[in-house]
Every structure is written in C-alpha cells, then in structure tokens.
Image (cartoon, rainbow, N blue to C red; front, top):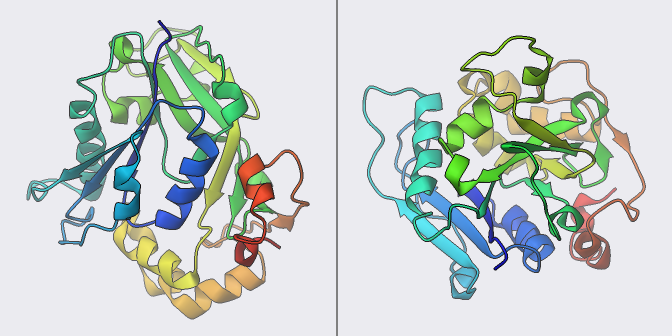
Length: 267
C-alpha cells in the first residue's frame, strides 16, 4: 500500500493562492488538511474566509479552530496553537504517511511529490522566492526554506517542524536537542509566491499577522505598499530590488496554462 501524502496548511483569507495551490497539487497529493481560526493571531474575532466551493472536493479536509486563543499568549504562540490544531486533524493518518506542512503560498513542486522518497527523518523543500508578482524574482531570499515534511510517526509538532527543522542545523558539529540534524534537503523544490496579492490585502496581512513590528504605518500604509510594488523593492526596507524573469517551464504547469486567468499578477 502506498503511503498517503497529506498537504497541511493554516488558512487566513487568501482563497486566490489556495485555489492556485489546489490546482497545482490536486493530482499529486491524497488530502489537503486546512485549519482556519475564528480569531486572528492578535486574538481579534474574524470571519471564516475559506471558500465553501472547495468543501465539496473529496480531497479537502477543512477544520475550524472555534475558541479564542488564551489570554496569556503572544502572537507567535497563537500561531503555534493554530498549527498544532492540525495535529488533531490527522487521526486518520497512518504512521508511515507523509505529512507536509507549508504556509499557503509555499507550493512544493509536484514533480518531486510523484514517487516521493524521504530518506531522512525530516525534509526541507528549498524553493524559489517571488514577491508581488508570480515572476518577480527575489534572489535575496532564494533558496527559501519553505515546505517541511516528515512521516507521521516522527511528527513531534507542526511548529517544531517549522521552527526547529532548518538547514543551518546541518552545520552544527555536536548534538543538540534543539537542533534537529536528521534532515534531507530537496533542491529547486517549488515556489514561494510571497505577497502575490493586492496592496490592500498586503496591508491587512501586515496589520494582522504574527510579525507585529511590521504593522506600523511606514510598512502597512496602502499607498506606500503600492509604491514599493511599482518600484520592485522590498516591503521592509532592507535594500532588496527584485527582478522580472520570463514565465517559463520552471514555473508550475497550471500557472503557465492559465496565464490569462492570472495575468494581473504576471509581469
């Protein structure tokens, strides 16, 4: 019996990127496991945004976190709580099944998922990073350590896999409990389509997600964001300048075939 591939994400509001993810991966994974919270990471109530049209898809298992986050936790801890809720949704998985976790905009290359073989305890997908537009390349953060994977029997926690399973651990010469080293790196293993959305949605994201230092006006003002997109420069004033590249066969096949549908976000 083949091991199942489970694609796990936490969801906030970006159906645009999820639909792209779903269409790229639907023929290569067994299930999509999605957790959405009724509260943002600042513990403010939010409406459920996941598009109900996806709920009829047999491969999608959608769960909601209904309770508020604890009152004594910070934004990062609330993010971790939402991630860990995914674990409760994996009761049907077998020990040898492969649990992939990504942010929604980190999309593994489906060609790697076919006949996937994980030789180590954990895997990291090193992905090309793009900002604002699908073909606006960010060389400063490429390769991006995005999607993580392990077998269910080795899954300590989703947040551990995200925060403690990193390629830099391989450089440590001595064993450390907090520096997992049993890691396989998958090169050129997908795409991180970061902030491929409208300036208004980028502003909302900055004002609600876990990096609270970026919620101030100089980062989250819509007009400032528009200017940075037009000038192809970094949101966070780190001196990064992005460059347009040709949409070619190194991009997802679905994106190429649906160029017209996504043309507003292709240069």
